[in-house]
Length: 158
Image 1 (cartoon, rainbow, N blue to C red):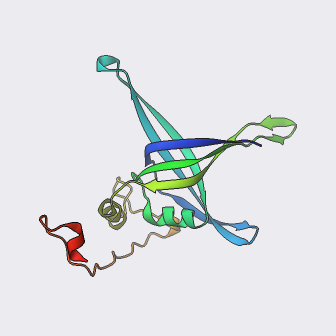
Image 2 (image 1 turned 60 degrees about the vertical axis):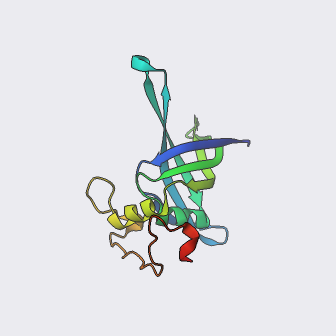
Image 3 (image 1 turned 90 degrees about the vertical axis):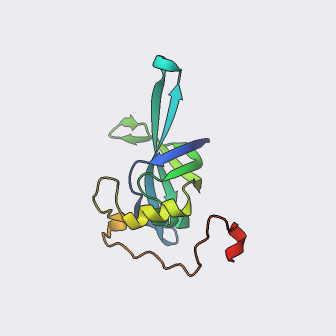
């Protein structure tokens, strides 16, 4: 079965990453599912239209675990992956489907934006996130580096 390469650029996550552990060939393996939405604007003036494309991606292994830890609703990402035809027979009928599997994922938010989203622990509706089935929030890690001043270059606080 042939795979088709898919690139989704400048997408944001529609919700929290859903992480689970499934049985693989060599034991349990992490599987994460996320929905990324890309907006495309066409036209100009009053004829300007916005078209949204939502793709549900599957991530595996360490990549899935990292996404569940560092990404949340609203996170900005670029995703490169593959589209696979996922047809099968059920009760004599052909069921047509497609599966998107991520091969590369770029985290576009800054570290500060990502940490703020995690420590806030919400899905922008005021409710605490229950990422990975655990509603507890972890305390942010204490930084051992002193903060930079606006005039100090990035390499000065090594």
